[in-house]
Image 1 (tube, rainbow, N blue to C red):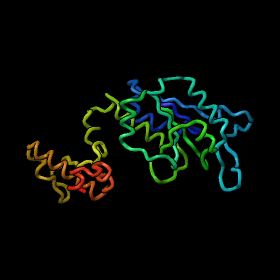
Image 2: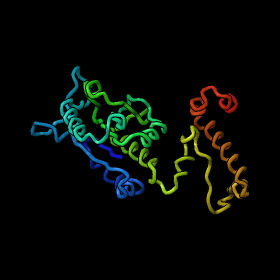
Image 3: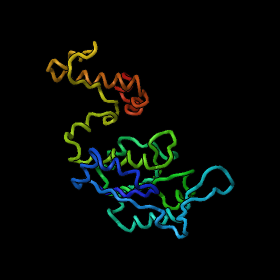
Length: 242
């Protein structure tokens, strides 16, 4: 899997790519992460990538030319055929990113291009002319698209075959089946008056599986009831549980 990230601040990624699972994935050649900086495609001595918005208003808007030229440069790599490529523009105006989107990329994509905004956002011609998918990681505003890009790289990478030590880790976690994850416990059996549920100590795998499913449903109902409605979409289970 190749990630090409178009960003004004590639240094922001150094820490996350040098630690933990992502670092191991890079060392094992499971992923390659490359950066393209639009400042390298400017023509003035100040390497300007933004300017004041037409019509007035606060902040600065990203200029179209250096962004287009940076993306042209990335496209010249042709790292995968179109059907195995995803091009994402990271913006709070985009469609909400879901776990299923990460899973689809991990299973069916070889090349992901991520375009990070900054300042007050993109000149609208960047959205129109490049035709990238617009995605958001949540209904809030960050200083730029770098943190959302990190989230996508991390979320997709951990789903690639061989990246996690135990493949079942990704199968049973939150959102994998449309539910939040069931409660987890480890040693000691009792801690500050709080005990591990007896069923988890029983050795009865069928009972444990049933308990975990019910607890996942309970937690989802209490904390993210919207997931149940989306997941079941009027199914018989949804009518019973939601």
